[in-house]
Length: 384
Ligand code: IPM
Ligand code: MN
Image (tube, rainbow, N blue to C red):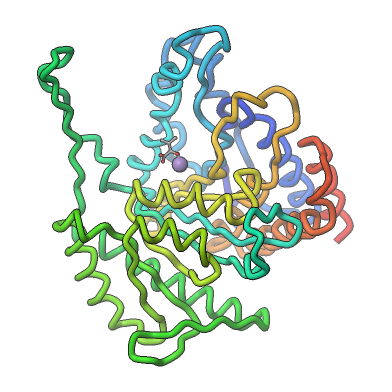
């Protein structure tokens, strides 16, 4: 197969620490299966880069990344030195921009955030049924609340007004909803293959193997809510085998805590998806285990970006104790994605997922350093 090339951007805080373990796993897998896989490290964006160059990342960063098939990203956001009173303001100025730039410029319009409570992961909910939590939150990643339109009028006066525009297009709405239904079908098929089944009731009393739940706030935000609902109802007709459900975002938050096992695929807008996925991460074991990816399913020549849901965690950075589990699951998903062109990569991704899941099941309750977890997973990969 033609060589697959990955750009590795470790980023800030714990990013480099967790990405180091991902790279070690990739090395083991490459050697073991003779994978046609190459990677290049980019030291930016990071605080050090910013100090030296006065910018979050080079002006031509996107051009440098454009030719890779995927970007594996550690974490972004550096609040600066602990004694700087402006440190949290700095985190906005330094190095968050590139994340949104990448999503936008590479048209990574899907953000997939699976939340499955795997054996060994921390169970925050006491209820026994929490073991059945297995949902995929699909976040619209290209527009909505993140279009960054608006401004501040009469700035600095008591009469100041800030406006923040949200833009939803029918095209982006249709494609994300359709993507959600396709994933629901795929998940049902995968479950069947693993000998697992789930059942969801439709409104007319039938049972289906999968479900899509649309999130809106259409009781208050009418224009957007109505368009999303109409698109959802229309597209759902093409998928009579998938049960449909609709929740207002506030009620969804409640139900995520009350009965998260009742959800399968969840489709949400950019901001609402952002918020719901922090909650979903906790339901499935916490930020330390929650993978994420930013995909461009339409243009195979544009890189998709793979980064855990967690941030740069400046409070524990540099100590070698960050949990690389989320990063390793994210790397597994990257390999699976790249496997569309080179099936040997998909197999390697499955192997990495299985090794990480097995390690979690066996040792998830132990206190271990990032390196120890990476070592354990590499060992499993060598042995399997
Ligand atoms: C995420 C993050 C980002 C977002 C921030 C860092 C801009 O919270 O990836 O979930 O809001 O999308
Ligand atoms: Mn977030």
